Image 1: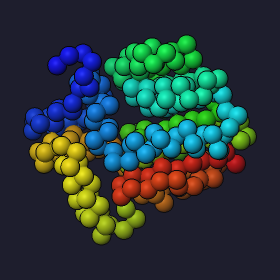
Image 2: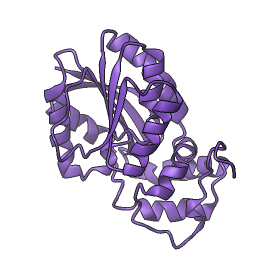
Image 3: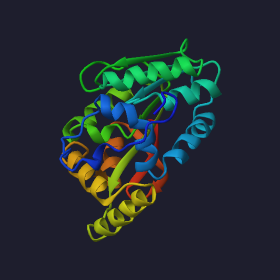
Length: 243
């Protein structure tokens, strides 16, 4: 495989790789392919991001991406909005390294900073817009409210947060239905039943989803007005306005 070809996620073909899931060097190598094939609405989310910002926070200049992974979101926003600056945090040094390389490759590295940092451990920098795309779900549920309070604290009065989370259905009867359809879609994207089952086991206890209502209760308690902009089976996106 040449360096320029996107690395295809085949990590969970090994049925012994049952976890716990970590964002290590192996995952960083295939992350972009993994997320495109694992999150059915990922392209739609990326496409909506600049529209949401243009309409909801047109004067925003400082962006903070918590759980920035390989930097795709910030790099896209920096290329669309020529005056913004952004900081991306991730706990995985391997993902941060990939984000730095991506920003350099796309010619936006002078306005973007990527750092290895844990949003539960250190104060957040000030920002006009905070993005938490598939990030809160990896934080222990008991710590999520504190992180949302921290976001509220560093935003200006008209500040905005974009949150995307994996969710569980309101009604338990739908859990098996939604999960079955989600797994079918992953198979359509080229994953085998073994890969799907192995990864599910690896993520158990690492990725802890809540219902939409539980997420919205946390947002409200932290001082945000929330509105869903997207739902697909087991994924939801919200726009949070600081009250």
